[in-house]
Length: 326
Image 1: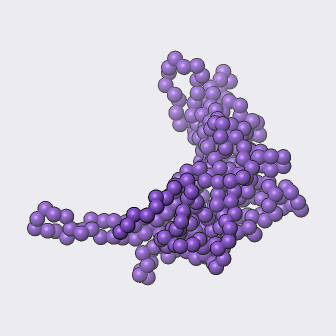
Image 2: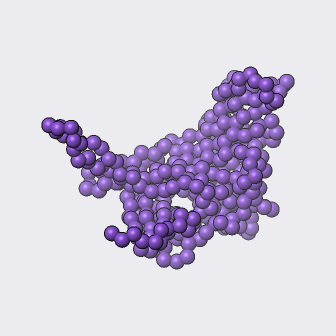
């Protein structure tokens, strides 16, 4: 086999499509290329060792199992691109507004999950189907870079390799020029007060999912069962003479958290966790450093919140309907 022209990794692109049904992309779907930072999406095939015994020390030919898909990736958070992922992760979506800015609200609910296909390629394209967004994490880092979102994905394993053309014959929509904001400009409020004493941390939204392979002759999952959501977080906070941070994590008091990020005038993102409890996770050891800090874990839940959602993401942007742009 003759070696061809080496591929340039920076020319590679990963497109995302909303599936019409699990493992199925309709004809002529719309491709969206998110503001990728790092990560990978694809499929793997299980490989097991043979159980057959030999009368000599040589290995026996191994056996192959089912395909599985998924992995994780990081994207920049923009007012349009984050809505695409939120639409897939959250099960409830509503919109409002008669003009720019439009308001989009995403909640955790019992509506059927939405699935996606990913297409990774340069001159040829690998497609992985039946993907469920199982996690969205927002790091709270004081860095001079865009606010980021770490995304985890679980896939069915159904795939096509080395396709000559994209699924979408048209020009994909790109979000490289979406509005972004420095991560260090994000505002975290605790119980309606901006927490200047919080240094960093993260808020993580997750959803359990089980992929089930049937005995239909296929080597990938035929069914997906997205299940319970989970809301967690952690913060590193300054300790003070009023025991502000320690009091937050003492007892069974309920607290509300809000993460706000303004992209431009009237375009912003607000993540609300209205019911949460906190626990001290680590008190740093004594040393000769300057500031004294404490680490606190956050656990969100739904008890009696009026929104009936353990977490609520609200985004204002210039797009009238997120469902329609798919």
